[in-house]
Amino acid sequence: QVQLVESGGGLVQAGGSLRLSCAASVTIFSINAMGWYRQAPGKQREWVATIYSSGTTNYANSVKGRFTISRDNAKNTVYLQMSSLKPEDTAVYYCKANHNARDYWGQGTQVTVSS
Image (cartoon, rainbow, N blue to C red; front, side, top):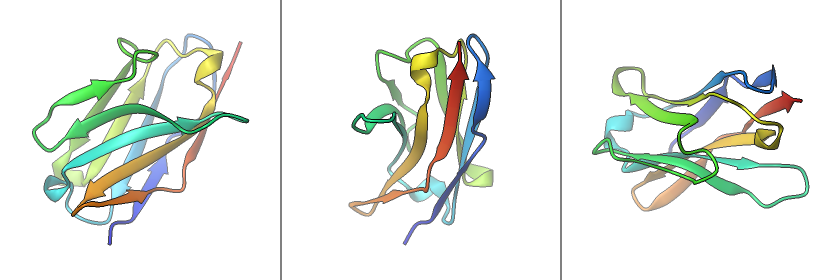
């Protein structure tokens, strides 16, 4: 069982930055992949970024070059650094962990970007 707690969301103006955190209840060194997803009002949840235990990262085209995913194994935390934010980045952001062939989700954190 893996519990994930996101934090760091808030209200920011367009062009600003935020850093989201996802704290895991287990050592993330053992987790194969951790990622961030987001869901805007009236839209389906979409993938944003993934980081693997190897350190390899992947990003959705919509955030590539603006967002950076990273992990701190000592703190069992994954981060999403978001820069050059746009109003279309407004969404609830969720952390997901794939561990032992199961997916675990956090409760989400709201990010609102004003124009």
